[in-house]
Every structure is written in structure tokens, then in C-alpha cells.
Image 1 (cartoon, chains in turn yellow, cyan):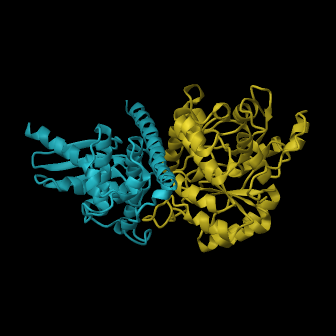
Image 2 (cartoon, rainbow over the protein chains, first blue to last red):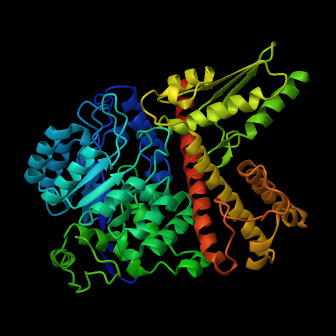
Image 3 (tube, rainbow over the protein chains, first blue to last red):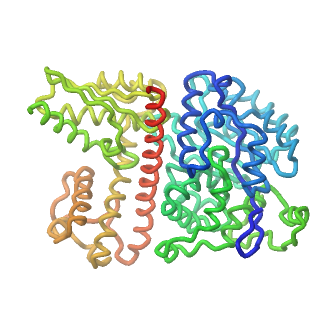
Length: 346
Length: 239
């Protein structure tokens, strides 16, 4: 819950968080080592006072998470989007058991998503069915750049991927978080291309496709696709971290996104522990678009900020903000449904 | 002295090689880590990228572009280009040394050579440079009618300040790369697909190409930040 200077309470859902283990003990090979190091370089985009020592960054505790996200970070609800990376880490980078144990500790504040990999074919479909029911998942995180043996990635339009999307629909895993990475076959194509999102979003209109990092580094292609597909959403993780180092760039990005997608299809995510929600949210709430951008695409209003920080994700994950506010002893607002032009697919 | 001049020549050849995604020189992006010229005019270049995971197709393009740019210098007898600290460095280095096609570097993982991707990113670089030049011209009073109608010779003949000249040179360079046969009477400004611009709706077009420019700038910033952190990290390790 973030409180504005005028005393208004804002409900916050962090749409992208992790409890990862990139410790030396868990690292399988050079790839695992380079992966966490690369993550650490991204972490350095934080304001200095929020930069952790490398050892802590490799593996942090539940208590670190509780303090940084729930106590200091204004976050009411956190959504875990796991990143398995079984070829790089012995127990996986995100360990599903650890996520679930953490959810049991905070059942009213944590949502865990699962994942699937079409290369697991038939066996993976069965596993997904079991896990989804056991853990009560409402969404999955897909990492198309994941290595698996000789394969260096997959596409949403692969034949087995369609089977998994059908299964997701059947199991009520409506929120498909997609992360793009640079190692998708065929390698000669633009590896970050988001065109496969376009295709599956049209074919599966009942699923929501939340494109993490708003398609970066193909932001321009992404906005073009998202403008046409009402069930495509922008996850702000990574992009919003630029609000500290390059506020002008971030202003340009957010005005572009609100122009093309409207205010109802953008979701806040800190990507914790890459960055801490506290400073991101403070800076985001303080942000006013520079005059030239505001003239071009309209100002970034408090209403829009509230949608991005919590209301949009609450809609996708059936979080009742009114009920939450009651628990916090706050007045229940009747305005939890956004008045956007886009019909929510929830 | 001769040796110094030769180093300068190699640097300047490398300076014309760009990262296709960011449309900036591999030299200004600080990718090149080592340049050696031996007494028999053999050139060795080493470069690294902001992350261990940068897209191998772009890495391959940059490596082969650097090799070709330096090979084009008359006195050069042999060039070796080495990418370091990258997950597919060995495959890329071997293939670039053998002057192979990208398909040979990654057998079975590609379905074509890199010409389509090269063309796509050339188009994006074109849009980026065009947007910068158009914004500069608009700020100096040139309107939609002039922009949609102007010929190449009119653009070349414009009296501009230093900034304008620099932007125009960058634009003309890429325009000639895309369309080497464009005559002086050809339109100065078209879409990347060579369609004429609509003077009634220049605003929408500008919004579109501004997004391309912004995307490149954003990627450029991330790359610079990651590279500088990587360099710091590695220098700590080595010391």
C-alpha cells in the first residue's frame, strides 16, 4: 500500500518477483555462472544505496524478500514468475518448492505462477496438469530462450507449444507471461522477434499474454502488435528500472505504451531482486511526463498510475481490492473495475 | 610513424562498422578491446560484447563486418577477428576465420543466411537516422509539403548548421547503402520500403519512426551500462 502525499492509499501488485538461487553451490556450469553475473550487471542500474554485494545477490533469504517487498516496498501482492534454467543450476534458478513454501507462509499476499516447456512433450503435459491443480496456479511464465540439451530455445508457434496453450486454457491458466530471450531457433532470424506472440494471441483470445519487459529490446515491434491484440499486455519489469538512471527514456516508453495500449493493459513489476520495488514505486509516483511528451500523448494521471501499479494485475488475477482494503481497515472503493475501452479477459 | 598511421587507418575502418541493433559504431560502443598489427601487416582484432548472452547472429555480423572492413585496406595482408567471453565465441570465431557463412557456424540451427536480418536492421537504422534529420529540419522551419516533395539534390544543397550537416551525412550514408542507384532527382525522404511520404499525415509517420529511434537509444543505453559493469567486474577479478 503506497500513500500519496495527499493521503490517498494505492493498492500495489508487484507482477514480477523472484526468490532465486544463483549461489556457487547451485551453479552447474559456466553458463549458470555467467547468467547470474549478467543479472548482477543489470542490478547495478539501481540507485547506489540499493546495490547489494554479489554474494547476497546470488542467494538471499525469505526475510530479505519480506522486508524489501512487503515491509519497505509498498507491495500488497507479489506474483512469482519462475525461471527454471535446469541446464544451468542443479536445483533450478527459481525453485518451485521454495516458491510454494513461501506462498504457504503468505497465502494472502503471494501468487505463484508455474511454467511449462513444450520440449517436455507428453510427459510435461501430464506434469503440468498435476502441478496446476496441486498449486492452484492461475498463470505460467514462459521462457522461450531456455536451453535444454542441444536445443537452445523454442517458439510459441512450435506445434507442441499449441498443445500446451490448449492445456493451459483447459486448466484455467489464463495468464501467460512471456519472456523473450536471444537464443531462439532459427538463429539467423531476429531472435527477440515478438511476432509469435501476435500469432498465438489471435489464436487464443481467451488467454492473456503478458509480454514481460514489454518486448525489449523490440519495444517498437511490441507496441505495434499489442495495439492490435486486445489480450496482449505489457509487463514493465526492466523498463521501469530505467526510471532512475534515464528518467527521460522511461517517460518516452511509458507515454508510448499508454498511447498504444491504453491505461488498462500495463502491469508493474520490479523483477525483485534485480531491483527493489521501494525506489521504483516512489520514483514512478513522483514522475510527471516532460511537457513535450505530455502534449503528444497526454499526461500520466494518478488514475493511470493506480491501474498500472495494482488494478490491472488485480483484474487478471481476481484479486478483490475492496476485500483487501477491508483487511487493511481502509474504506472500500467501488471503483475496482477499470473503465477502459478494452474488455478485460479475466 | 607509418605504424601509427596504420593503426589510425584500422580504427577508422572499424569505426564504420555498426552494431546493427543500436546503429552505432562498434568503436564508440567500446566493443573493441585489442588491436595489433605485426611487422608483416597482419591485423589482430579482439572484441567483446556487453553480455555473455548477446545474440549470436549480431555478433557474427559484427565480426564479419569488421573482418571485411579491415581486409579492404590495401596494405593489410591478413585479418583475424576474435570475439571473447561469449557463449558461442568458439563457433563464431572459427567460422569468421574460415570466411564461412553463418549457416556453417551453427549447422542445423538456422534456415537461411543473415541477409534478411541485415536488411531488417538496415531499414531500422534508416528510420532512426531519418527521424533525427527530419526533427532537425522541422525545427528549422521546413514543413510537411517540403519534406514530402524534396529531391535528394535539394536536400544536399540545403544550407545547414554543423549539427544539421552531421545528421544529413549520417542519413545520406545509409540511404546510399540501401539504394546505391538513387539519382539526384529521387525523393530525399521516403519510407524504408521506398514509398513516398504523405504530407497530410507526416505526424503519424514520425511517431512510428520515432519509436524505432527510441528503441535503438534504449538498447544503446542498456548495452553501455551492462558493458561498463562487466568491465569493472572483470578488472576486479584480474587485479
